[in-house]
Length: 351
Ligand SMILES: *Cc1c(COP(=O)(O)O)cnc(C)c1O
Image (tube, rainbow, N blue to C red; front, side, top):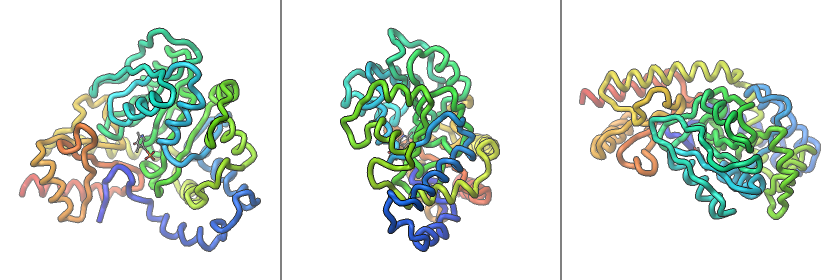
């Protein structure tokens, strides 16, 4: 079976042997306060920063999920209001969580076929801006120019959910203060771990706000990771796999270029053969998650046809649950697998 599900998604094949190595290393039965674990944690952060080209001054911590990161940002970095720029289900869900935690959210929805705007009413430097770099639910992405534009107009911290982008696209780190992603999407790793990357300004703000009510309050998390410790027993296996995997990957600029080309070819293929990308404006299409819209009947038929050829397409999400299907174009997926998908889609059109 080849899976194009956008999360949990296809694992890199090297994970299989890394799992055995992890067992044999003894690390999984070792105290997480021990030296071997601390060394492994330090190396993982170093190789992650190296391969993803993260600026030296930015700090990396690990959490359990992107959802946990939404919560951390809401509880520990929002002394005033949070502004939520979104055009899809994940961005909206983030706002819902923040609303339940602090009740001071301002929603700024934008259209599917547009980049987010840069007009932010009534805000100051203690406000937070939240946006979703790759909206996994509908296959849109915020491009680097828009991120820069947001950065230069918004006075407060900028937080970016890059769950379906990080490790697949080159991210302009300097345009935001908080970046996070869970690893079961573009990283091609098993779920249960998330990466959070913080600018010096975000670290400062975390100290200044000084929120210390929760096991995952950001000041505790940062303080622990600086000592190569964690506030709770971490996902040691997940961190081990991340470490091993990152050391086998190309630098992100290379990965990103390949993926972008492959996605452009995929969109072109789809349009040439009578499939309609959900996102019409090619400038806002994601390179990592491709959504295709059709009637309920056709979506069900193409998914069933693909399954009969041992190919798993992703369901639509939210309002497009039944009227779209999604194709992950993540780096763990190989070119021959994408070719097999194209053949399958052609055969479906001719059937
Ligand atoms: C998958 C996804 C999430 C949720 O990730 P969890 O690891 O389940 O918390 C959040 N945001 C985006 C953009 C996603 O694609």
